Image (cartoon, rainbow, N blue to C red):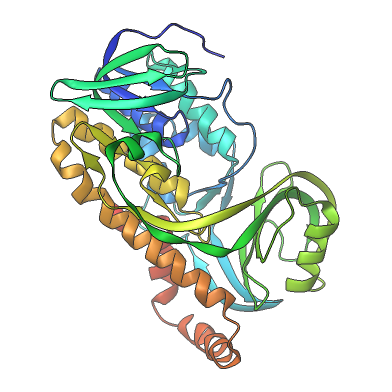
Length: 376
């Protein structure tokens, strides 16, 4: 825990020390721009949460000098398989993409945060913990952030990298347009015998819901599944039951490392800037975990915003990044709805069309979209 006293003022106050805030901070640190990162947690999260790092994000981490350390901690996967139960409908290949990183890296989010924090410290920065921001007030000359402890920080700008319930976004009066999915999501990291094996990410469609199984380091697998109403802490039996229903005969779960439930929204902030207040990451956009793009889009936001501060081109940040979020939210929403349709005719048409599309340019286009290489 870093209990270093807050300075009186800084150029950029970053609220939130997750991957988005850390990417922004590292970008500013590498250019010598003064900043302070504030996080309300006494320590960084040690649970897995996001687990996918796509090619474009690895390119950004190349720029920040952090990619090789992260790659060494992860598992490289070169294809996603789309299934209906045990039947393969489509393979999405990543190994032919025009990038130095023609694969998807599977690595727990705490490892990504650890690597970014190590890089930030190597650049002379750090995260101030635990500091919870109670209020954010801007005026013509800057922004005053007041902590729950009563301490204050004066900054030229404040960035909300503080998640879906962003204090900075609320202070800016920026709307967060969209809706919540009716379903909840089960998330679990398990050890299991999985017939498709650790060389691919499996997206299994079905009327009961969307199920994603992805390999993780240490012979673990990440399971993400939509359900009507998930228990607060799903146990091994529930995970096994879900896999038996949705991928019959494919999985034998032997141990459960960690599990949780969450609900997902699909929302985009109406603006990314209001005067001296700016937004990035989940404070600016949230969406379905299908495709694993949430943390990736946030890290890329942080890097783009950092470059905008460095180059003095803040006015272009929203125009650059908000359309990306709109596209990602729309794409993942369509994918979730196609995956979970209960309409028998629509499901039949989908299951006929996808294998046919596998012989066209569609799989490569999907890989490019998921890898976010269109957003360079």
